[in-house]
Length: 263
Image (cartoon, rainbow, N blue to C red):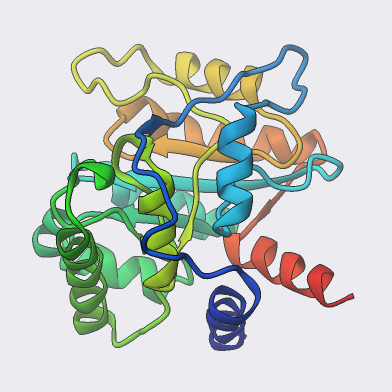
C-alpha cells in the first residue's frame, strides 16, 4: 500500500502539478507563520503562502471539516527522547512523520531504521539545515539528495517524498526546485515554543499548549528534543481521541487529494 501511495505521489508531482520554469520564479524569502485561532478553530496563514503552496504542490493544513490530525516531528539531533516517543506511538498505534537531517542520519541510524520499520514516514529536512533560498540550485539539490541516498542506504526504502524546509524558510524558487526533485513541501498549522531544551516546563505545560491549539485538520509540529513533549504525548493522544480526533498519516492526506483530483 505504501509503495502504491509513493508511486501516486511521484505521478502527481510530475504529471499533475505545474512544473517550474527556471526563469519564472522569485527567490524572495518567506518565513513560515500561521495564525492560531481561539476555541480550537482552524488556524489561518498569509494568502501569499497559500498561493505558493497550492502552485507548487505543498500543504500546511488538512481538511478542516474533519477531526483528523497529522503528527510530525523535526529531528535535527537526538536528545534522548525519540525512543520514548516511538514507544508511545507504537503502543497507541499512531502514525507519524519524522523530518531528519544529515546529522541525524549519521548519528542515529538505528532510530531511522526503527521509524521506517514501524511504519512511520521519514521525511527530508536537508543535510546541513541551511536556508534553502540562500543556497544556489546545485547546493539545494545536493542537500536533499544526500539525505535521500543515506536514508535508502539505511532502510532499503525509496519512499522519501516529503520535505520540511529548515526553519520554515522558503521562496517560490525553493518550492519549485524541490518540487522538481520530487518533493512535497509540508509546513504546519500547530506548533509552540518547545525546542528550548534548557527551558522545559513540565509535561502539563506541553499538554496545555497542544490542546489549546489543536483543531480539525491540524498538521502538528512537535520537536522530539523536548522532554515535555515526550512525557505529554500519551496523554495528548488519549484525550484527543476522547474528543473524537483521529490520527492520520501524511500519505492518507495526499492519497485523498489525488483521488479528489481525479473526480
